[in-house]
Image (cartoon, rainbow, N blue to C red; front, side, top):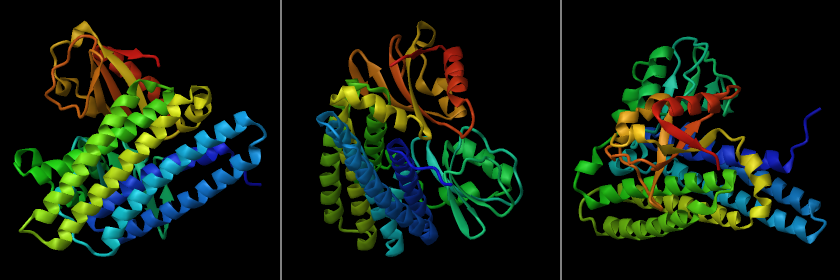
Length: 385
């Protein structure tokens, strides 16, 4: 007999599936994979169905004004995450409508120490590296979303998310020597050196939108309202960048007009992500209901941790910590009451800086204790929210 899905189950599934939809749409864009794009639309439809069930359940459960307030909070979060999947669907639509994707969009997707890759397993592997997030496995004719296993069978097609070095390692393990090159050959540019304001704006809008979403989710899980101001500021900046990108795209006298459409749709999708982050962040103001929400979202595949820089690390650069080696990404840096986003590798650390970090939690493994232990040995003090 199938287990009855609770409100927490449904909320967790929306969170997990929306995250997969975004990353799978990124992969579809840089690879032109129509099958992956179709799968994104299937996930989007599934999230719509889950959201309807969520609304039904919380509506039936309302018995008092307090219940109604909780229902509003849960519905708002579900609606915001549903909007995230809608943005992913818009990106998948570019692939299915056969729009050529501009190199600036590909560069934005593949930057900042986190990428999404497809690998074809030429041999069986018992365990994949734990710092990678296994998004999708295609085995035979079926897709498995966020599978709970880490073994790989010969013939599997994997969509993974993580640091480039770890993806390269996995490509070697599964015998796919062309796996990473398939991605790096699709137009990855050093846009920071390109000197083109449009290129820089496209990369920046992606980084800021994803940062806003990460900060909002961290705030929800830990009931931390201190980051709401920066989420709102990021959303404002994303809106400004969105209009700037549209203006620069329309004013461009050279380039393929259909490629310019891909830039406009991509920027619009990033603006939707930032809007969703603000919508989720507003629920923090209703603190008495956050424990319920946090418990549901904390079980998702992404984990967040705050750490204080001790005297031992003062004067070192972010790159000196080698955080990508353990699958950890820096989301924000707090310094004297302000937050710095994005955090560049050459930033010099000061004592009492606060780093907001993100990593992926493999299924069935005590990753949190392992990661926090490594961070403490580095000289970072884990902060309890």
